[in-house]
Image (cartoon, rainbow, N blue to C red; front, side, top):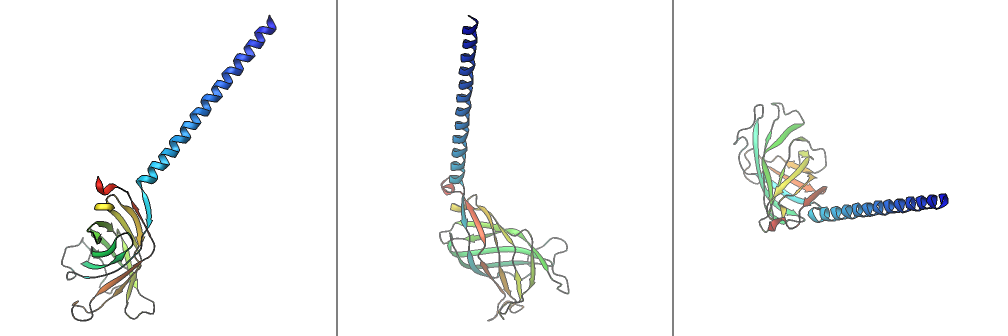
Length: 209
């Protein structure tokens, strides 16, 4: 009888252990499925794309036409056009920023956006961006058209259409031609951008929401 009781206890323990093992396996399987579902849903919500753009902007207003914070010397308003992957031909580019050069123009010259910039795609969708802080330096290359250079973080901050909810960043890689002081005639002030390092994160289907 004692032997039978011991055998029964052993069988019961084995059954309970096996049952717990099955439950643990089931929980682990469910967790694994949930993780896969989460990763799948996340990848379907966000799509990371390389961002490249080539464009030129010119002065759209005389320097200092808008107020800046205390200590700033002038505002700059620039508009232009160009092209970009994922946007196509850029029918409009807009940026407004403050710069704070010293009277002796000691470099670097600090600047920052005071209004959200925008790229307007060929179909009218807008990709918004800002440069929170940047620095302009003398150009030391061999192209005689350029006198200044800056390569700062351009941050994407949403937009309209397919760029609603967009995020990401890019490097400006920009070169400035000082031109004439009055921005008239055959030698205007302009800046060329050659953006080849950047990521644009979009949310597919957001334009239809």
